[in-house]
Length: 460
Ligand code: HEM
Image (cartoon, rainbow, N blue to C red; front, side):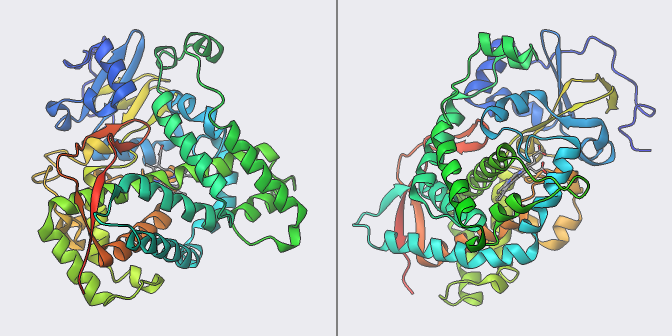
């Protein structure tokens, strides 16, 4: 029996104490402007933080065994959180990220082969070709080559997901997703009625959501689907084809147009921004740590010697991967995810009532001093195999964990490794002096003011 089971620890008496720092106005402001500012230095050390907004209970769970309990051992008792669903559903509908139960299981089964190692290997030429195209554009820039690297990575990963999953290199689709995502991140934040789980109709009346954000994108997706419908034989064997062709084992029925649309939007959204942020934060950290950048360059010279990487190189680019892993420790693109128990649970001595909001924050656990020595230090060596093995598995969860672990984790790591290798071979990126860098936790963890950097061509 695990230590988090209520049998071993006293249950904290109700009512739960409010975390000292939690004040309603401050929490709401943090949720709207920057989720990370809700947590003070003492919270990184905590195993569990209890909060309350009127009658709603919230628990931030920040201990590896307790996280394991929620996402793995007792996962059947947890659904995704209602607040998260309310935040994402207006855009994503019921795609893989937001669906539950049998629908989720069926859709995950249908989609899994498109993310297996063989499929990911098949996408690598797309990843490197599009990165080389970007580098050719960078080469042609007049001096001083200065740009927003966060925006450049967003666009690159968007073209890659669009090509790999939907065989589309439509500029229109990319442009409309870019517009949609940036509006969504800034305009759609949890409202008090949503946090209180008021009925949806009442929440929308009190805190209306902008509904038009994705209508432009929906039209483009409709066109993509219609074009596929016209030439079923010419269709490439990509994720879209898989979604259209999928049949239920028992009923023989396929996905409805709405279901296909929801998966397409989900993969577009979940499949590019997080990876682009992992890369942006990596370039920022490397610009601040030339000694680590030098080690990265040494590996690239050793493994690649100036050529474009191919799939077989990914496994050999060990240090490159460690750099990305360490960057996602400090700046986890998916900084928070939520669950809620179906029936009461007990965690670390607390009774977690059915329906309570349970939050897991990679942002906190990745910097917990009892798990990470010098947690603020950027040190890729932490991810050397012998040191990784010595840490609790659930201390590092950039892709989540358990059955609902990110389906695109291998895709993302391969993509980030290849992009970093291609770019770092050619350019050294340096922050424009005076450019402010602030992590801002909205749906994802973004650099609040973008990342204006100068591109310095490396001599060979
Ligand atoms: C560095 C890049 C990425 C990060 C940090 C990331 C992070 C995450 C996390 C933390 C979850 C779990 C959320 C939860 O448990 O509530 C998740 C789920 C998911 N991710 Fe990713 N992700 C990344 C890249 C991708 C890519 C490239 C794709 C698709 C091409 C993708 C598609 C999804 C989907 C569909 C889910 C839902 C899976 C399910 O519930 O079955 N992600 N991701």
